[in-house]
Image (cartoon, rainbow, N blue to C red; front, side, top):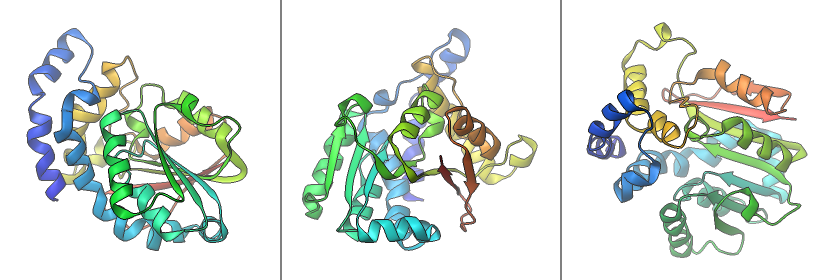
Length: 251
């Protein structure tokens, strides 16, 4: 909740630019939210990642959990300041982790967080795109935390992730908990997410010529994206949360 309150001035500071974009097109790029934007997202998500990512969310996928326990390879795409990656790396010492994000300031903070936590032996943060990864790598688990709906080319990214995922691997997608239709989202959480979509998620995608999917994509929309990208298996995981949906996607 502290992160949510911190995000309000961050989002409303760009309101005039969002209003202009509704008239003239375009949007507000992620980097224009500055350090306040990075901090707000970090504060909203960090506690959940540290308290639930491993002990609850990953344990809901026993095969994945066992693989990481014995030693696997993990890519955290769109890792931001890295707390999901750090939490996994601290819990699974035999596995290797890469956090990838295009935002320089986020990766700088993630690298500092790793140094402060003493987690550098099985963890590496990479600033850039897929081309900045070592060629030929395959991953047993790929995580995307609250970022698919923000992307300028979601299907293109998912196709790349499909190529990087090992034959028996899992793509674990975390997204806001919303229904597929507007009428089903007429509730306080839906109102919150539509507001965040207009002032943050949708506009940053539109700023780069993306589809502007926005925060309220919903399960059917996500399934359509992953199927178009070449995945065959799409599962909505039955995890208890009022704010978040969880998907397990496989070849």
